[in-house]
Amino acid sequence: GYEESPGLVGNEDWANEGRGWAEPGTTPWIPEDMASASIGQSIVEITPLQLARAYSVFANGGYLVTPHLADQGQDWTAPPLRTKVDMKPSTLETIRAGLRKVVADGTGYGLNDPALPPGAGKTGTAEDSQRGGPDHAWFGCFSPYDNPEIVVAAFAQNTPGGGSVHALPMAKKVLLAWHAQKAD
Image (cartoon, rainbow, N blue to C red; front, side, top):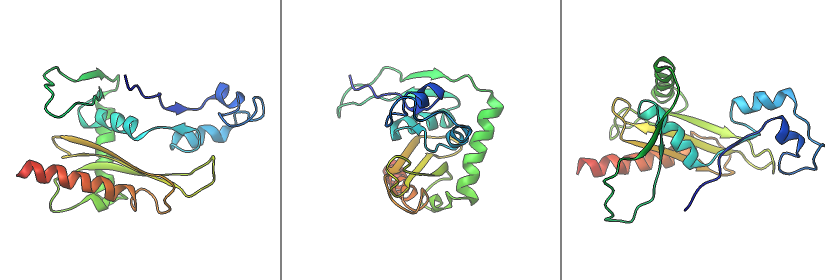
């Protein structure tokens, strides 16, 4: 199989073991680590596929979906593997409303296009804390907001300018193609 390693959110043991790049015992856990983790910086490692899975929870009403690759023409009649996430409906709706607001009048405003139904998403800019290079750009989204059909996670490595400059336009191209083929 093609199993992906789980994402990483560092903790005290991880820090004391060297954070994956230093000698054990030389990088203790500090209060700033928790602050950085809370906004997805520094000690958080996630792939675009893992971000898309997280956004699937917001898009489909609370289920974490396990994606699969399929050959063209393959019969996929089995229902998708999904797990209900333990989250209050009110929490899920608050997150969904926040993601919609980001696109309606926040950093995700560039997703608005007459060719697209209203969507929801969040831009992200992550520092390259290990190499000190230019920031990474992220954008996670789903569309349409009212009845989601597609989740997209876009990532641009070491591209100064942030999620709204680099990753959002990539996701927008995917959404435009998706909705155009649905209209045909």
